[in-house]
Image 1 (cartoon, rainbow over the protein chains, first blue to last red):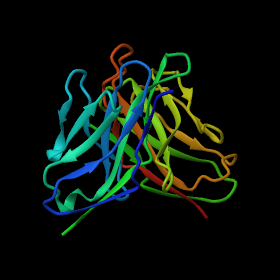
Image 2: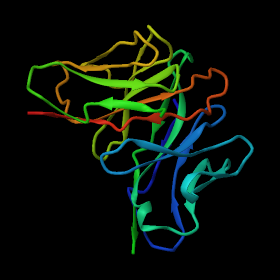
Image 3: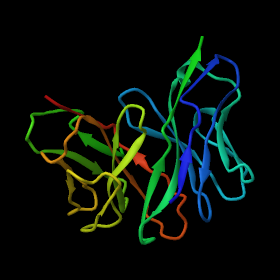
Image 4: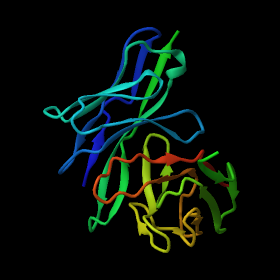
Length: 117
Length: 116
């Protein structure tokens, strides 16, 4: 089965500094990777997804993600953090379920980002 | 205005009761999903459906049931057999592409269920 790991429960960064939220993956075949953000008591919002061949993917709200095949990583980045970026971030991968007919999304445990003013 | 609507936002259940959470989408998506979110555990898949009248169990289906009678609707029933139902429940939908799987999921705003 496909899986993703987010090694940091919490990331703290000062406003205006660059931020990185880490994600590593374990897949058989092509990786279909996604990043989502969740604000308190809300659903998940899609930020960006990996497109085969693009090692740097640009997404919503100034976020981007760097894909590294040799390190099996898909880290989320932003050049200059805002206080409003404080939220819970999830990395996800598409998974074949059981008989290859079913597809679903497998999520990492989440990383809480705090941007300090 | 396209999207996914979950209702109610908050739900309280007494011990031994069944409750049904609503999920409706107008995105014309074939695939729909139910996830449970507990603090510190991320999202866990309960059930998913690729097409109408078909659904598959996820990783934590025990104590839950679903139906998919219409493309736009995927209600989740939390039965009395679910021993610890207090959680945040999220419904999602996506385009179903069996060959290329790079279509993202769209989420509703969630239902917070509390057992009283």
